[in-house]
Amino acid sequence: MNAFSPENGTPAVSATELPFTPEVAAATAGIWSKVERVLPAEEWHLHAPYIERINKLKKQRNAVILAHNYQTPEIFHGVADIVGDSLALAKRAAESDADVIVMAGVHFMAETAKLLNPSKIVLMPDMEAGCSLAESITPADIRLLRETYPDAPVVTYVNTSAAVKAESDICCTSGNAVEVVESLGAERVLCLPDEYLAKWVATQTKVKILTWKGHCEVHERFTPEEIRRFRRAYDDLIVIAHPECPPEVIAEADFAGSTAKMIDYVRDAKPPRVLMITECSMSDNIAAASPTTEFVRPCIMCPHMKKITLPKILHALETLEPRVEVDPEIAVKARRAVERMIAVGRK
Image 1 (cartoon, one colour):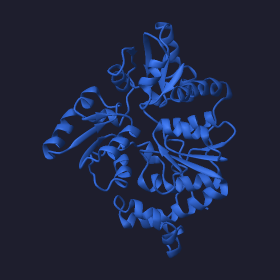
Image 2 (tube, rainbow, N blue to C red; image 1 turned 60 degrees about the vertical axis):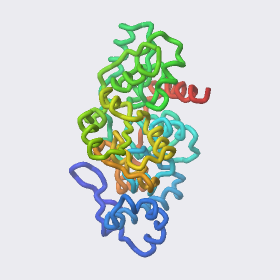
Image 3 (cartoon, rainbow, N blue to C red; image 1 turned 45 degrees about the vertical axis):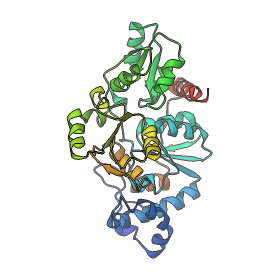
């Protein structure tokens, strides 16, 4: 069994407890072939025993692991069954027939999985994996905004708590925000809480967008000067940015879109050299599958996503803890907002 660190209550497993054996090497050889371009062999010898153990335990538990695009390569390619952006994970969570769902992402994603699978066990390997956007707005804030703008429907980004979703009319992600906003048939819409995503949406639609000053602590750190510096260093550089970036950063990019659309862009266009203005693990994960593209990495990491590790995932599967629960009264309203979002895509 895993030992525990008294400082933070997380599993503290030493590498000697899970040795890299010939059997582990054989069982994980196919995964290693996917990630050897982005992971040093020394690191792989530490990760592979956990990957082999986790993948065995998943079958025993009838468990599925959902991993966001910002997870590290050993998680994304090594143990994840379903990968993608927050929209893809929300949709696939709703379709899952597993008994246990493990969320390799952040807390609001695990809550969303629980909303869509109320009878299933949903595990969050580290309950402290939060989100600056989710923390930037409260249910009370939305109630006050409704009083101020009674004619404006409330669209909330999925990067919010279940309690905030419950106060909303419908949810959205960066991948479907424009479609969701236009589906409401309103002259103006509250698009919360990401200010920069809302401003980007405003450039894509005739609907008047009302904003809130919530920001992603990763994407808000990028600057136009940084992009121009990279362009001076690389003449053939293609810059693609996430719409959570400031408008002046998006203006410097060749393409802006959700994480899923950024992946599609690289896969379809196959640029010789690309700079992805988003969380840097995503570059590693795409690079593993894009051998003809060189990735220039400005590398800003999400400290919350990086709280999820292989030892914590293994511990969650072994103990079926920590479990994510949502208050039933909140869940009913929040589920409605998420399901309305998914229904827009079906239409």
